[in-house]
Image (tube, rainbow over all chains, first blue to last red; front, side, top):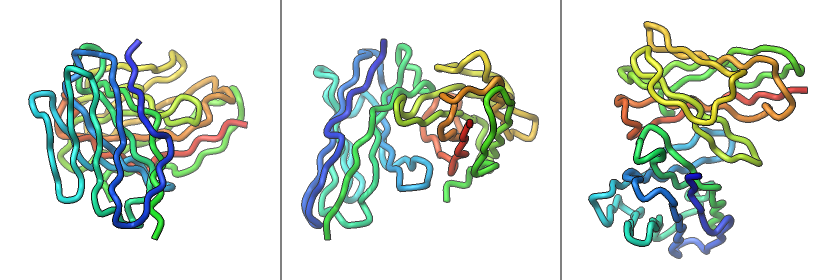
Length: 114
Length: 113
């Protein structure tokens, strides 16, 4: 079935360093790839998304890259701050590219050490 | 604050019972999505409604059902509850029917004893 693999499951970085989280999807028809940040006790928050016609998208300290050939996409956070500490989820549109059926990765717990 | 509200925040009930979770989308959003988040299954899409009509279905059990009302709020009904139904249930809303830009509510934590 459709699947999104996410690595690593935990990531610890020093404040100011960069963090990279990687995801691989299985459905070649997937065309929408959002990233969500979930803080403890809260719902997931959309932080950035990319569509399949774009290779890279940047928003301040956050960037996402997409390699459709390899079916990989990654989240890059630069100059990390303690408030970046949270669980990050990647997702890909499922069921033949239906963007309203998101398949989520298993999450990455990011800890930014001050 | 995403603008999506969910009630109740916590729900404790017994096996075999039935519960209703409520969601109010952001002002102007026509789509409502329901998700289940558990430790073993992760975050899973259950069902989507757009302007009152069911638009997409995911891994939703037959014991679960949902609807969206004319004022666009939605309810998720869970019946014949089992221990394994204990999870966080999230509602998300978006302006579109195609799934882009979903904004999640704070969730309802369901505990089945």
